[in-house]
Length: 172
Length: 302
Ligand SMILES: C[S@@+](CC[C@H](N)C(=O)[O-])C[C@H]1O[C@@H](n2cnc3c(N)ncnc32)[C@H](O)[C@@H]1O
Image (cartoon, rainbow over all chains, first blue to last red; front, side):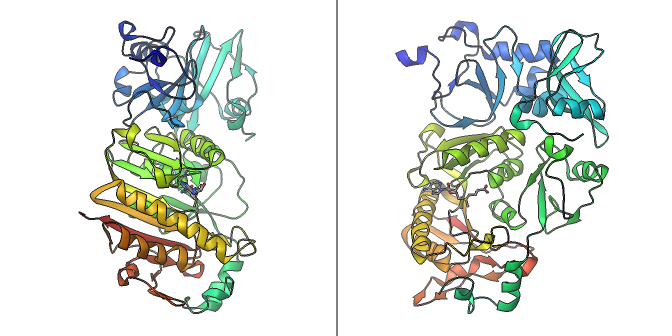
């Protein structure tokens, strides 16, 4: 272990340690934390991620990769940006929710087509929701089935769209 | 002489070729099977009032004219706009789930994401390009389409390093080479305007270097596909001829359910290895698509 493996760097990917005992970089999430978070927050079975390794590049930016690479690796991309950690509340990306959110069983809010369109346009809306506050998986019906669309923040009776600017569309 | 006249003697029906070059291209989308099925994608489009037409491949839908730029299935990453011939090389490479695959000139990732889908998003797919801006488009496309087995590298493919990936050779590699893009004339009506022989020869040189590296980085018995969207034999058969002489590889015959003609063995005062006839030239009037060139190689023992 060289010194530069003791800190997070924004120019390369470091594999997340399996558990806290193996952690060298303070604050870095562990694989166990990531699995537990998806399970606790959304009920996504940890087995979903069996074929995946998790990596950090840039503080708190966690990537999920299905292929093989040696750690650390200084390249441009490794799978998809998947989760933001190191804030009080962890936040999944829209892309991660579209890819894995179909397996979520809690903190999922199903929207009607007009509500989904408002959400996709990046706008907030009032919504009755008696579940947890915080980040929710947003779904709506597409081709006869419920499909994960993105991430919203539910607070104070309001569903706040978290669709990043580049992914917003106005389909109303 | 410049295109299209330069190709008068190569093309079977030059009048039809010329006329096709002047027509706009039909709009085609590829269904992303990482996130949905062909049936559900068709249904989602039909629900929006869009009835699609079949194409040469069941994953590719031709859309009616004046389609809105976005729709629900697109937003979910179920669809990717991709020209009908652009889907050829990944199908010819035919990677399998779990393999190690290299896409040497990958950005903006139409073929990378198609390779990812053919691999069922399993195995390791390395996508390389020299252009950082185009690589960021590739990453955005890969994330929208939910491809998680892709590693993206910014480097000159001619010096590609296997080091981050265990140093092991690939099972398959795709070289979708930078080219003079003559075959995109229907999409870019000024594609012939900036044409120069120097540029053709320059990009052909890059193509040779990248294809050599692809053969070197692929295991014996592995497959390498070379493709361009251009007609110039300098960038196509001449590149194959050079690499056949320089690296341990041979051309392989393959089937393609699209009208095409074989690679040419004579051009101006050059002659090429006869086996380049196994490559395929697709002209715009053949299937109402863009122009394309595609060759399949097998890596042999030294
Ligand atoms: C025909 S385009 C690739 C299109 C891409 N395969 C797709 O399907 O979306 C050729 C690409 O080669 C890249 N390129 C040019 N020279 C290169 C080199 N020496 N090494 C790697 N990539 C190179 C260009 O930046 C360009 O993105």
